[in-house]
Structure formats: C-alpha cells, structure tokens
Length: 430
Image (tube, rainbow, N blue to C red; front, top):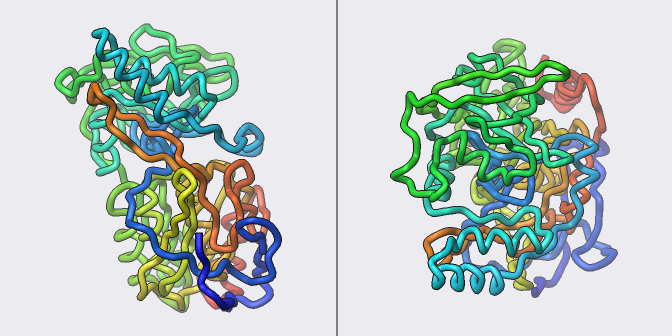
C-alpha cells in the first residue's frame, strides 16, 4: 500500500464534542487521518452484515440479513463472541467442490464442509437457487413470511427481526423468540442459510424452480420463555423498507432516518432524505440493529454526508484498497448517529467513517465488531462461495473486527432522547 505525502487534519464542525481515536494502519501514528491511499479497481463487496453464524446472506442473515435473513447475536454478549475472523482457504473450497461434482455429489455440501472446518464464521456457501434468492433480497423484494433469524450460543436459532405487516408479524412472532423447527424439522445447530431456505421454501437441491410460491403454508415451532407454541403462516411477496424517514417531534423537530440494512438503493434513499432535511433541525441517522449489507451502498450513504474523501480501507488477500465518498454531500446539517450492539458490518463501516471524519457524533452502545470482507465466487457446480478475503479499517486506521465502534457518548437506555439533546446543542432542533 502506498501513501501520498503530507498530512490532513480533520476539522470537526462540533469542536470538543468529538475526540478522534488515532490508531494507524500498522502501529501508532502522529497524524489525524491516514494519508491518502492509491485508488484500486472498483469492487462490489458484500460485508456480510447479517451473517450470524459464519454464513453470509447478504448481510442479512450480513450473509443474509434481509428477509428470512440471518443476523448476528446482539449486545455485549454477542460482541464478546466476535473474534477476528479466520479465513477459509479458497483453493481448498474450490477443490472440494470440483471433486464432489466429478463424483456426482453436491459441490455445495463439500464446500460447506471445508468452510465449517476452517473456523471462518462469516464465509458461507449458497446453492444456485439460494444465491438467486439472496440477490433478490438485496433488491428489496422476496417471497417469505417476514422473519430475520440468527444463530445464538448453543446453536439455537432466534428471531432477530420481524417485518411489520408481514405474515410473521400478524401471527404475533416477535424478536427474541426461539425458532425451534420449520415444517417439523429442527433448527438447532442448522446453518442459518438452510433455515432461511426452509422459511423461503427453497428445496434441498437449491434449484430456483423448486422455490415455494406466495400463498404456500409453513409451520413454525416457537418458544418464548417457558411458552411453546406452533404457528402456521402463509408466504407472501414482500418488499423490505430498509430506509424509513419520519419526524417524531413534528415539523419543528429533527428528521429521523432509520436504516435497517444496506440493500440496493439505500444510499440514494438516504441522500433524498438528507436533501429534504432542514439544516436548522438536524438529522438523526439510526443504525441500531442494522445488520449490514452491500458495502457499496454504505459508501453511497456516507457520500450523502461527506464532500468526498476516505470512507474506509480494506485488504483483499493482502492487496490494499480504499473506498471513497463522492463529492457533493451535505456537510452542513447537524448529524447524530445512533448505534447499538446490533449494529454490524457495513453499518459499522459507515458509523466509523462519519465518526473519524468528524462529521457526526455517535451515540449509543458499542457495536458488534464484524469488520471482515466477503466476496462471492462461482464454484464448478454453479453454487456460490462467499468467502472472507480481508478486513476493513476506518479512516483513522481503526480495526473494527472483534472490537466494534465505541460511541462518542456511551448511552444504554434513553439513547435516542440523549441524541436529540446533543443534536439540539449542535444547532439542530428547537
């Protein structure tokens, strides 16, 4: 990696409210932000933001955090179990898949076995049909019941998010409920990708033609505390609202932009919201519970608030790259970012960039700590391996993986109320 000469100082519009953490890319540094890295080829990266268990569904379940997606454990307990990622050997994965295909066996299963033995909790293998479904989720539409799930300690599958108005929501299913079985098949110690496929109705062969249609039923066995029950819900075609804009305090208050995940179009939606926001009222960017998504969309979101410049650096098998914001973002509107233990992956990249660049005050609890990068490649049988290739760092050189982002103001309960108070002090809100 080569650095341009000279130093750049971050000029924070918020003065003493922000203190930058100055950790260099490879040891202590004496400059305020990393010197500019040479631009690499543009890449579309998946930061599995939703991979709860070593698989990536998009970022949602950050290998797939979307609908019927996976997400990782939340809160401090989850963060404690988020060590730096091991790397699955790409050549070993491809070799296993090719040998299995030659023997008339499932290349996807053979590749998944190699990934499982590697200890890489964020890499995953998709059958062709599963990957098509995943791509559809990134587009914001899917056939399902409106559940996001994650794998917790002990291999249990837990509901992490329920889409409002979905079949799951109408059945009374809530985040935190344990999903014990799908259509009579237990879920414990089952890869999240497989649980997602069952919910979506994708057959074991993974073919897209075998996917269940809207209107088909699926029986769920659930647990909430000591209560056990079953619910039969019917799949329907749903669209994810990954960006929700509102004004909880009315027209006189700040604009609140809630971003649930970084699917296609998220950056453009946030940019539209920023353009409509009043510079006098400020903006709350709520990334709590955001399980990640497409890094390109997280970078586009950063571009809504920055006038160009570095967003993050990352490595792809030792080759150093960088992500840059586009010029022309709004640098005037006062900005507070809300995060918590469920803020993961691409959402952590965004929060870290806005924090290091002095563009926002970050408030809430420490984030999850998923800073690895996954990239997809096609295997001989048409299945897709989404494997960890490196890690990213914030503009000030901080590593996120296993560490997360520490807010400028650590607040548990009442974080949003405190955020509005801080925003008022920055010149936003009455």
